[in-house]
Amino acid sequence: MDGTLLGNWVGWPWIASHPYAYPALEVVHIVGVALLLGSLVTLDLRVWGLATEVPLRPLARLSLRVTLVGFGLLVCSGLTMFAAQPAELLSNRSFVIKLVLVQLAGLNAAWFHARDSLARCDALARTQTVLSTGLWLGAIICGRWIAYV
Image (cartoon, rainbow, N blue to C red; front, top):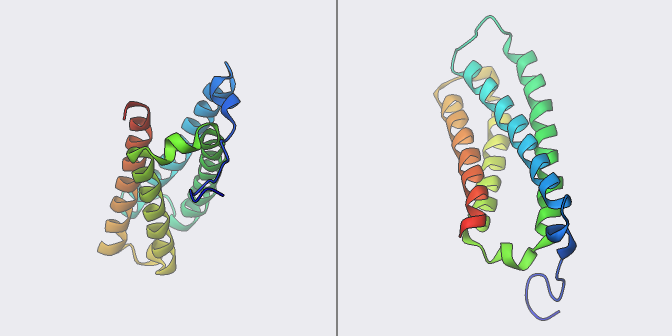
């Protein structure tokens, strides 16, 4: 190891230069974003009191499943895209901020579930939903910014 985080590993540069691989990964990443954010916003709106005729617990179970599928797609496609250019991404401020925002979103989700916010739907639960959406939107914005910084 040369003292850097990745040592001498240069990644899989063929992914970035392949005519279909990287664009296909980006499509999978976007589908993951759509599933994750769409399901979270739907549940958030219910926590805020919209569509009260929809039972909260069944909606939350469905939302969690869809969110996890979306997150799984994001992780798989994101790690593979990262492998195409690890050194460049780790030196990109937008990428690093994106990773921090994703971690904060995960911590917020863990806190939301640990305190059983669905049972409460109180002001803190509503604040957590706004925070969640804001963190994920921030991560999406930073993700798009990576190519331009």
